[in-house]
Image 1 (spheres, rainbow, N blue to C red):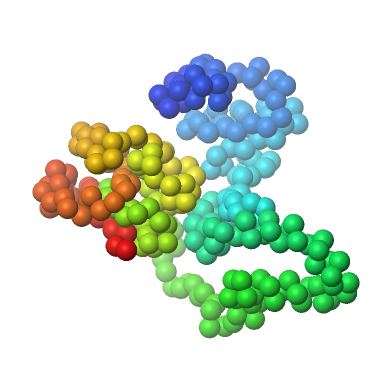
Image 2: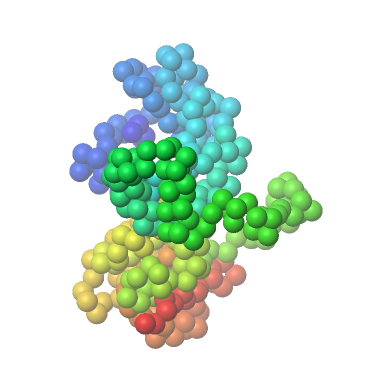
Length: 298
């Protein structure tokens, strides 16, 4: 990574030898011996220079938010290994690709990977037992239809087809009338931590949050729902300690003043006992919206 100034998080990654950090201005010398380059500066002149010089060397180059300067693009990924779904808008609408990935993340069950792993291990046995290819295909179709409770016929039914309202304003028109952005602070009670008891709104917030702060005891099945490019901060807490007590109001005010939307994840049902009105009065409510999201009690 080449950058004259970096955040403390990047410095820590370099300190753990997770990345090689060069605190310097860009120089074409840094391209020597490389295969793939990503330009992610906010200086279009530098981005164009990186793209041009990388292409002259026959390197793969991606310039963030500038498809015309790229010779490869990075798709949004739904990872249910061994199943991988890659979604790309060919650089025309990366936000839509991310939103579609969020939808698929929710629709494709977490257990899909282990199910497919088992199916892979059993393929040879099934092939040995069912010699005819047609019969084998029908066997697997029946297996997955029963397992997932869906079929190709259900999948393409007109009643399930999504429609798009083409009468909506164009992006250019919408930009003129867009209201001022309101940053959101979401306090999420996770209950027993079982992802099945979280409301859908939790998933939406985790996919839209710019930063998520959570207790280190929060299970991976929940943190997997956080959008890939969000800042994530794991905090080790005592059993009865709240994430809110370790995240000062000054810190939250600074973050939301910068336009960030924040999610605080706390095991149990701590947040529902808070005086939310009193807490909300800490913020300018024309700029910040405070909300509570509760897991189901079981």
